[in-house]
Length: 111
Length: 387
Image (cartoon, rainbow over all chains, first blue to last red; front, side):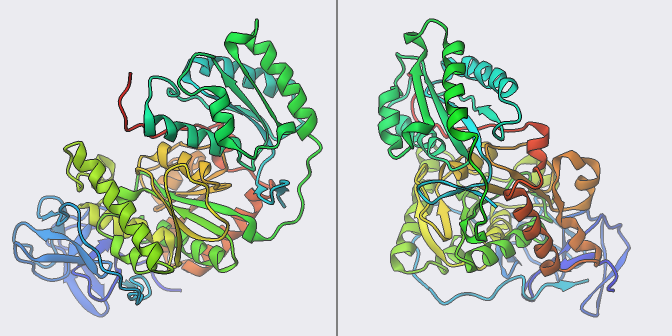
C-alpha cells in the first residue's frame, strides 16, 4: 500500500503541485524522486511552485496554462491570487482540431 | 430497476410533481403538495411542488426560457403524474405552456387556473387523487444502465475537486456513455479556459461549430452586461485554492471524462438519448442543476469541495472532493472522493463503488442524502427585463 501523498503533480508539464493537506513552511516533500523545501505555509488544495517563475510567464497545471505570474515566484512557494492572474480575454476564434490531446490525468504523479 | 414510461424514457422515481406557471401560486402548490404527501403516503414515491418567482412580467426569449424549463419538468420520466397549477392572468398562460410541453400523457396530467375555481387547494387535492389512481400501479422493471441519463455538476469546488471528485465523475461519464447511456455537462462559464479541450472531442465538425456558438454566445451575454468573462471563482473557490477561472474550468471539465461530445443543447432543450451532451446554462448551482433535470437527467452527480445542502427534483448524489467536509457534514455527502488522497483506493476502484451506488439509488434501493433531507428545489435562469 502506498503512503498517502502530501502533494500531487497532475501532469508532467505542470509548473505546480497541489497540496493534498495543509503543509508547513520548511517541510521537505518529494515529487518523483525530487526534493522540494516549502518556502511558506501552503493551505490544503493550494498550489506549490515546482520551479521559479518570472512575471509574465504562463503557469501550467493539468498540462495547460491556468494564468500568468504577476510577481517573481520562487521554487517551493505558494502560488495563488497574490502572484497569479487570469489570461482570459474576450471572445476568441477557434479552429477544429479533432486529434484528441493527451489525457492530463493519465500521468498523475504523487509526491 | 426503473419506471419505463410509454415514450420509452425511464424514471428513477415515481412521483407526482406539482408545477406552477407563475410564482403567485407557489403557496397554493406547496399546500397541495404538503397535504397530498400526507394523504397519499405509502402509495407513490412522493408528492412534490417546486416554487419559483417567474412566469409573469417577462417578455420574449426570457419568458420562453421559463416555459421550456417548466415544460421539461412536466415531461420528466420521474413524474408519474403532473398537476399544472396556473393563476389565470399571468404571461405564462396555462394553455401556451401545455402546448409547448407537447407529448405529456393526458391521463397522467391535470391542470387548472386558480382564479377559475372556488378553492384551489381542494381542487388540487381532487386532481391529485385522480393522478395517484393513475400512477400508483406503476412498477419498476429491469432496465439496462444505458437507460440512465446522468447530469454532472460541481458546486463549491476547491483545489482538490479537479483531482478527486471530478475525475471520478468523469470515469462514470466514460463508462456510462460507453454503454450507450446519456451524460449531460453544463455550467458554460466554467468551461472558459478549457473549451478547446471539449471542442477537440466533438463528434464531428457540426458539433464543433455548435460548441463554439455556445461558448461565444455565453461570452457575448457577459459582455452585453458590461461584465468581464473571467471574474468567476467564488470566495469559497478561492479559499479552497482555485486562483483563476481557467484553473477552475480545467478541473470542472474533468466531469466529462474523455467522452466524445455528441450534441449541444440550448437551455431547456431535451437531450436525445446517449452520448455526452453539453447544455447551455450558467454555472449557478440551482439554475444549472434544474437545467440538467429539465433536459432529461434522471439522477445528478454533484461534486463539492466546500459542501452544500442543495438537492433537486431528481436524486442528487453529492460527492466530496476532500475527506474534511465528508467528516464535518456527513448528512450533505453521499460519497467521499477524498479517499483517493489517502493512498487506500484507486480511481477505478472508487468508480466501481460509485457506479454501484448510482444503480442502487436509481433503482430505489437507497435514497440520496438530499431526499432524506427533503432538499428538492428548482431555479430558473432569468436574463431579460422585468415588467
